[in-house]
Image (tube, rainbow, N blue to C red; front, side):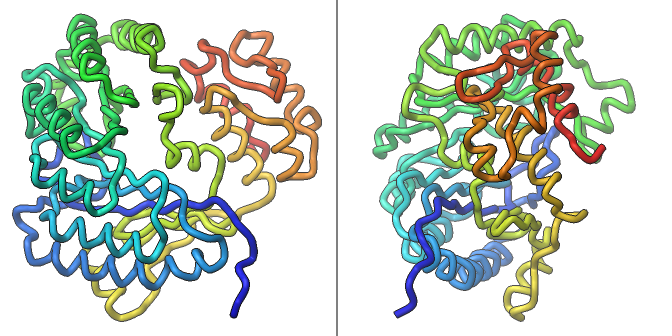
Length: 389
């Protein structure tokens, strides 16, 4: 019998590229589910084949996958039998993970659907609420109301989900500080274990980009958006949600293992159309066109495109640095040395000293981390950690 090469923590990301309706700000790969009924069945079959082809070899090498994350799109836009079938295939191929997250739109789930997910092995739910203000929800193209979001949350609790995350957004068209304060209060009143908060970015090719170009997008000013950010980073820790990454807050012990894996460069297998993966130091993206993905999986042809550019040692090192800096604990000098055989101070000492003097970085017992001010200006600091510029 072939011996496994040793335990390695690794994860799985599965992409479900369907939504009931695409939101006005979204540039993720997704298609309207109402128009793709037959295709969704073909997609689930192709994804099942990819799971059965790609997961067992990694499990043989490294043991069962630790976190599994099913995102989109909107995974719950799939009919429940298709999504639960995929979960059961994952559970058989990858083992039962301690954390199995499903992203859900509150407007696509009910008690029966959530109960089926829980029975199929999902134990963490990420609800894309975005706001508890109905006018704002309508303006960004969400299909649910604030009341429906709360109903979905309570239904998830009743179905047995003891680990629920809520997404909120700020900087939305027409949003005020009072709007955000009310949404934070409504979210916290539900007592989720985790909260993710995202500032709106107007992405090229989205309806919001077209509206902005036409002068029809009423965004908050930069100062107003900054006030919203400040409210979140002050209010959520005061309500018991510790900030463990730039945009993520959790009660102790409920930090997302999937998210942590990204920021600590843990290997993960990306499955499905447009999914990205990172295994053995190589990054890739799967075929993004859904029909082409289905055809290629059926034919057994390659669906992966390697990331642009050579994966040099310097590129890996700088990527490690700015991903680790997204976390509250920052860069661990001992782990840096273990991975790269070089001292953190030797490589980045001057950069750390410079940004520490500016109040954007702080030295820690383990290495270096962003300050609160640094988290607000993270991109400026990250750029300084590029070695090949």
